[in-house]
Image 1 (cartoon, rainbow, N blue to C red):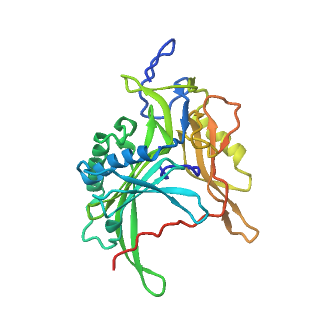
Image 2 (cartoon, one colour):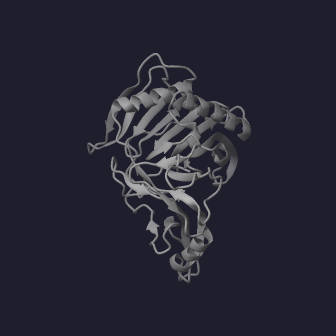
Image 3 (cartoon, helix red, strand yellow):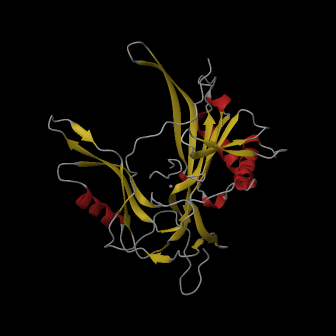
Length: 343
């Protein structure tokens, strides 16, 4: 999604007054249906808050309560900026835990498990999902997540592969080392691009990693399991269908000599990339198109653009689309070394 995405990511109200109750949505809202805008922000947390959250996560990772507190300290870059915090759990010596304040996200990696690139067996996707679901249940029991905000029917599963090769560059062997199960937070059935959960399960069946966090939403959950907006959020009515917005996209965003390669297009919540940490912005669901443009070069070859993202209003037909693609910039090297493979 945009630069401040969770996982990459990979898409989660009692109603009063004259507004009719909104039923939970299993698909995108239709024209005439009620949707809501919400205040969202990247929460600025204290070290104590990060410690409490980490203890709940560690409890889920280890399958038991901790006897000691988590120790939290900022990690500074050579320039003096704090890009992440180190979180230490004495009872989990093989786990490397980091908190990223810019994304309000906690990341945990079992360095010993991740270094194993030659698993003796592959448990398969079905069992990997079951292992992830056990961890999910533990996270909910520890208070680290609200289970109602996630829908397992929409879980995305990807794999990490390690390949061996010959001197001529041909891959001779390919081994799956990890399953990554991603769940995005949902609000009344609509995905939120910038918050969620990813659980990594090693092919051997061991838990390998976890990412949790993202943008905070000002809402209240009713007895009917509907999230209602708080603060400046409001109930709205959808006025533009996805089919009309898709046609508008092709008409306005795709030049005549280009072809759009669409990765996905759907209604979802996405906080603007320029939202400042600690400052709330009102976000409504939009029809978001992630794509690249393919154009022919003078030599007759096809040139593909970088990934582009446009978000169209579903409540205001005249509104200009938002550009959610992150600005191009020189990447900064990761201040921490990667996990080294065994052997």
